[in-house]
Image 1 (cartoon, each protein chain N blue to C red):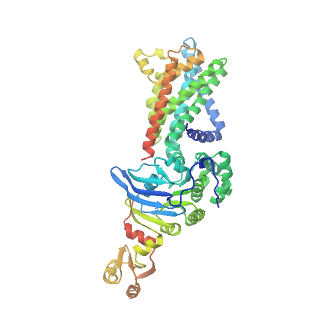
Image 2: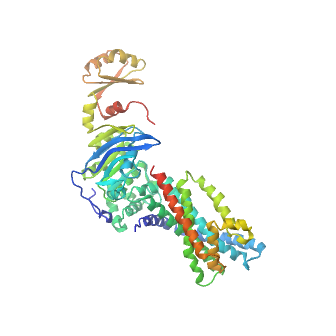
Image 3: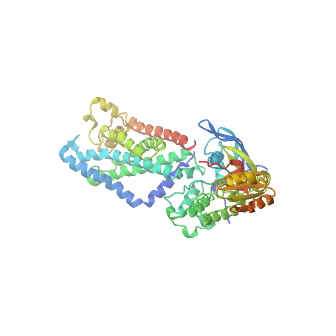
Length: 251
Length: 323
């Protein structure tokens, strides 16, 4: 089994380690701002959702949304810098590495970094007393799968992008609407039945369902199917991204 | 001087039979949008040789190198690098290859030393072994006192030297250099040339593209001239000059009417004549009659010199600008 993609993970880890402190502060500060701003501010107006305070409900959704954002930022902006602006991929491909090694390495790395962002929310949830005990920790490996899902899809954008502007469309036209459709900020059952059907085609609804189920004990309609959907989105994404990267770089 | 030291990546065939070329290219063809940018290119590079590919912009030099490295797939032809078929085994072949690309792609997120260590990792070289190699590589590149510098703090010449050092982390048999001194000032260029000469003296095989004739003349044992995707000449620099061009060049500068003067007076006493702007380039075996004619004409300035590789290049590829 070839493990050359780990060199890419190693490279990105070594760079990340140099900026460890600011990176960790951002990981914690970002969700705190969301939870304080939306959770307590909006929560005072909203009252209780599904029998619990809005801030607790929101934190369950933020687990996924934060993972999604982190995976996207890394797999879009940072990976694109390495692909185009810094020509880092080109340099690596002059060594005995293949395009698949590079793309798979970026995929895993972005998922790992995203897992860390999601886990930061979990830490905040423990801090506020939203969750207790060890059982909620089972969500961490699930967040990794969520990271694989969204970094895989984002890498397709990265490997076909001409510039950073392209990623604005991705966020505006895909990520943000998906966020509102998938039960992150308010419960999915608020939406009309037809819209709910659409939501379950998108991966984020599955991620939110798993995250709330595993941390807050909400019912999960199809836990294993949800996990499979996330994983399949990720694998399909990275496979398409590798194909696009080959087309782009070997011409 | 660098001495061989094997990393984990060297569990691969190392010694080639002396008759096997380090690189052999036969009938190489590459199309872009139906147009052949590399067309029936064939050459072979022996171990220990410095082989140059000369050509104007757009001649197909970089594409040829990329095909040889397996980074892009040819539309026809047979390639072998280090005895291995390309592109089928190009990844394995690259364990024994170093590359200095046309545009620097050093990792800006790392320091000088970190760049070398991390790059070695891509060749399966353990970090410990890589760190042991760093001092000698830095010494070779003249960057010892910059070992912890950030990449954006380096000058253009230093970046090129670091790129060259990086291409040596795996102690390769063969180095591919794509316009290694383009954009450098003369001092920086001479430093790179010194480094390359030391590598050839140490037994490395070099394959370089350039459009600097003095670079090719100084470094290359043999070279080919490429134009519009084809090889139009291939030999040692000396033999190219001896066989393809008249031995003496007289450049005559005048203000207005140089073209008319050259046509009227020079045409009859030279072998070949080219006029561009205010200069007439006269190629011949015996310059005395022309020099006498020019001396009789006040207002003309004359430079007499031996023919060089640039004259060959211009003769073969023309004086038109290539973009």
